[in-house]
Length: 434
Ligand SMILES: *Cc1c(COP(=O)(O)O)cnc(C)c1O
Image (cartoon, rainbow, N blue to C red; front, side, top):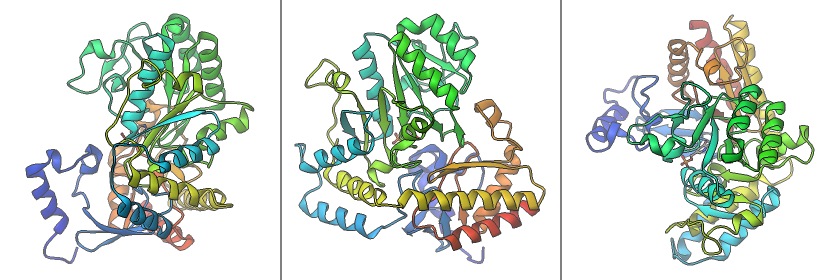
């Protein structure tokens, strides 16, 4: 760095005095990779600029929401117009109805949707609703899947199948996670055993269909098929957490990707966030009418929110969904994402680096491993030191990927073929140095 003052470092020091760890969400702190987090000054299209004025090609895109790139003119206009009409009313607006109608048109497995403000809130509410609707308490989740930080979901596997999970956070009492069963992702045998033991007490099974919180791991088609069959057989709700996948991997979301292999496939409940807010705090959960009508004010399952369906957030989300619904949008986004993934694979092969990568729509993941992992323990076989070298090499070259090896990456419509070509060229230099 040629500057005498590192403004990122100065800001980080200042932030650390008043915000725990200097950040408002832990992974931003660069704890896993070391070094100083970049404080973003502004962003446009595929790029952002940090406090030193350094430009980066952005492959995080706010962890997924910025599918159109930063500052898309149609979205900016919609937000500006909405702001002038008022920020928040605590009373219903037409735009909430419009946004939900649009979501239902694109994801027909749901009949009704409730809007909330974060993915955490949506997943937490979905579980309460699943419990209320079934009158059961237990739930299944999978190791390596993240569903936000509600108490019941911050759980890792216990010592055996017959036991329940252990909280992964201090401050979560064991009694609160006693109903959460944590299983290995893509392990059909374990799934069948868990249903045999607990199936009749299960309210729901929650899964990230293409897990993006352990980098990028697809649930196999036979695994999803078995999840669907067992949930149906035992009367548990199959909940797809599409907070990351929704409107990111396909216009019909991950459930449409699985329905291609499993005709007629539908989850019972869907949780959404990220892209549906276009970068504003907005998330949602939805299901069939009979389930959704259990929610207050119609039913006995309480759920509420002062800022739910916020008029500025709904304007942003609606404008984003309209842009991604345009003909050819996902074809082009998928092509560019594949271009990146294939380019990185080629560059790694040319430099003799063990590497695997995968993508769906505008979401991708890569591993310093010869084969794509199928579950969390396999993801964690990645050499963390080598990943950190790769991360810092790319960062120094002006390419911003997630500062942790267990996070997915995102391409936006604003990334040009040239951006991708220069990313691959920078990556090749870094691969050579590994
Ligand atoms: C991001 C994410 C969440 C949590 O959403 P927040 O808006 O960060 O609370 C939940 N589930 C999945 C799959 C996510 O990727």
